[in-house]
Length: 54
Image 1 (tube, helix red, strand yellow):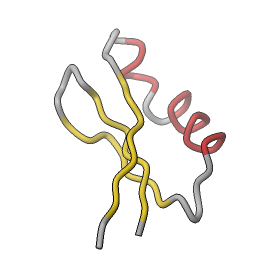
Image 2 (cartoon, rainbow, N blue to C red; image 1 turned 90 degrees about the vertical axis):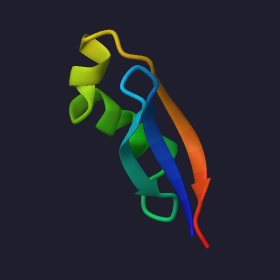
Image 3 (cartoon, one colour; image 1 turned 180 degrees about the horizontal axis):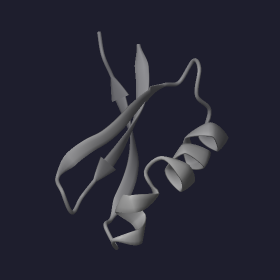
Image 4 (cartoon, rainbow, N blue to C red; image 1 turned 45 degrees about the vertical axis):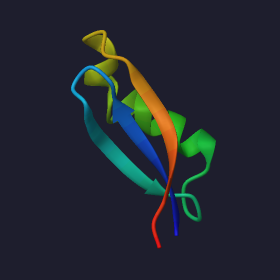
């Protein structure tokens, strides 16, 4: 299964993991602006990376 991870470089932890099958890039960006906005407002560095789980 393939996932996209939302990773906070400042906290050094995974903020969210979303299945590519159900969440496209637009939906993940929308979630960043709503659910994970507190990290962005605090000035944290957020990255989206691909994660493959066997």
